[in-house]
Amino acid sequence: MTSGDEKGTTMNAGPLAGLRVIELAGLAPAPFACTVLADLGADVVRVDRAVPGADVLGIPNDPLTRSRRTIGVDTKTPEGVEVVLALAEQADVLIEGFRPGVAERMGLGPEQVRARNPRLVYGRITGWGQDGPLAPTAGHDINYIGLSGALATVGRPGERPVPPVNYLGDFGGGGLYLAMGVLAALYERMSSGQGQVVDASMVEGSALLTTQLYGMRAAGVWGGARGENLLDGGAPFYDTYACADGRYVAVGAIEMRFWTALVEVLELDAETLPVHLDQSQWPKLRAILAEAIGRYSRDELVAKAEGTDACLTPVLSPDEAAEHPHNVARGSFTDVGGVVQPAPGPKFDRTPPPEPEAPHEKGADTDDVLREFGYSADAVEALRSSGAIA
Image (cartoon, rainbow, N blue to C red):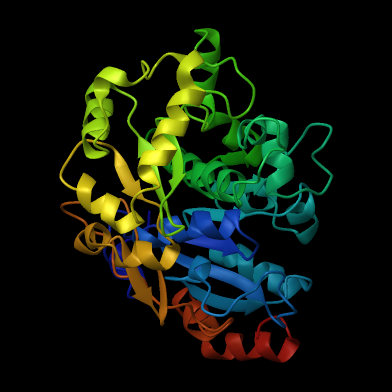
């Protein structure tokens, strides 16, 4: 890894301080992986297009581009490709999220990059993986989690599966999965001295998130259809309920002591209630809970449950989540460039992550980055004149 003193950026704190990462600009999972690394102190340089076109889903001040510098490079020119290779020579990690073969055709595939820097960890994230029958085809989060088995478990009984936004594929089973793989490869490099390719697929990453489900199925405690099991909304003590004001609470009182606390909060008579783990009684119990919870507004009921182990909490909107006293006390959210968003995490007692930095204008750091990586002012100007950089 490079020394933190060598970096020309304010990202000089956090457990990954001194780590240099080159990001080939893309969508969702690859930027999220780089955001996770940048949040923890890595020096991430994002390679954007020299002449930016219209970005699909592009948004101003995108939190997925925070805390890194950006250079504008035309990788369709030999000179532009050489710039990226030169940066990679001095980096620890390169991350890309293109379809299989695209980086190779650009001249920036693993063999081409690691020929210049054998210690480099080359992280790549795709939906299907780098090989296999589906590898060349297009897809999105919903397709990948459909193939992994994750999507089939989300939804109500007798209804179609419900896409859980793009949390499972793009982010949990994508970017975070890739970041974990990159860090594992960096750890291995400490003993071998060699980099390697990390091939992360969102099918496999989202499948990994379902690992517990397979154990429950094998044990016979998860055998119902979608929405009829313990953790998918089938159990009345593990579900959401509407309150009198139309807002919702989440209930997760599985264990007996938590169930007892919930019964007390709702002022129900425990002696008259069905046994809560008796699945044949779940429809009757659900009706009882819905009626009891529906007597209160959300915040009234949350106040009644406060300080107990009833496992009853509000279902908050994103705006409400950022303002909840617990999240405020923990610093779970932050304001970056006027955009409220989740703060870096997890927390470290000796090397806390730095405060996030607002996204830079695309290509804004081109000159500074190239000079830091050894280009002279004349060389930078020559690249600009040729159109290789912006």
